[in-house]
Length: 172
Picture 1 (cartoon, rainbow, N blue to C red):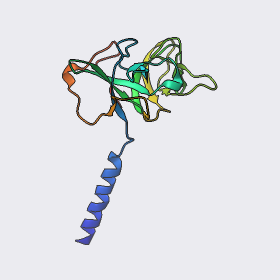
Picture 2: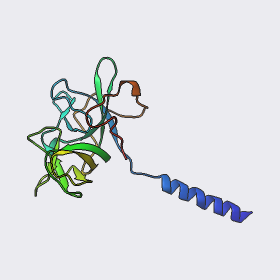
Picture 3: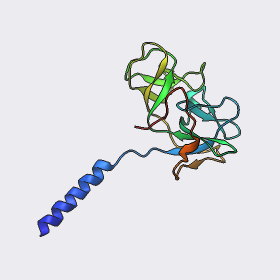
Picture 4: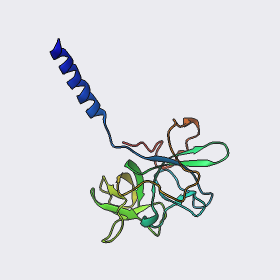
């Protein structure tokens, strides 16, 4: 009888460990009415604490995974870890480090020496295009956001914005 409890306990522990995954921090932040980001864009906070497309890697706080319209405002769900489809402005190889493209806000490019790396390409692109990237180097939003909140409730999927990057920004 004791063996059964030991075996069951070990199995429960294995199941718990197998189901463990990295925590993805998600924020719901109001979108700026100018320089408005789309799903997959790397974003920053403007002086009003709203999300807009990022043009400097040092200001990047994450990627827009979803957009919700509550009838009054549009909110971007920002993630700082995981895999997301993003636009890259040039050719890259799988495994290349990526940074924010300062000339094309919201997009990524291959990082050079000294650039802040915000993602890693998961596929090779011979020309500019969309591909899955692994988000790296993003920390929690620590200041400058008055309306942001950690996303703790299910989204209302009836008002999700669809972009040319596909029907969803699924986090893998």
